[in-house]
Length: 150
Image (cartoon, rainbow, N blue to C red; front, side):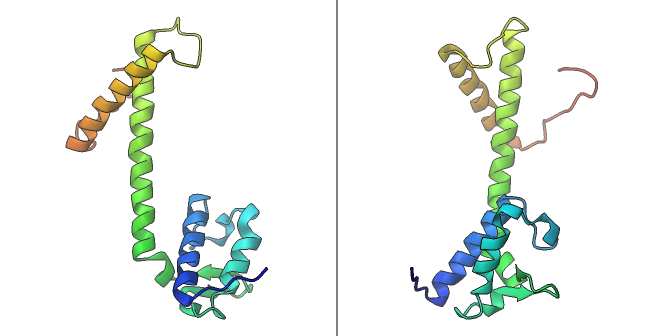
């Protein structure tokens, strides 16, 4: 099998590789965080950077391991990762708070993990309420009561 990439296309592939590894838990400043499952394929992709005209995007360390340069990890790639983290944070916060509130409303008698159609509608309403609050005020009105429930 043979593939042909322009330097620009391969640079985009390197960006995708870095972002995918980042989501999987790898951090460029700590090689020990590289998920073992992806090490070989990431090294193969990174090793092709120089011959494909993208040598400025990848470096080799003293152990002959390839890793992305700051040029690759900053700029648009960094912005995309920041946006992903921001979106994941708010989505998870809204989902967890809404589910907590619904389970509190339903009480201890709710045995099933699955919600009914009516409960799903109520959950969506709670999520909408949290989205409106956070879109308007961020976490300014968020309070954590230690040792108790609100």
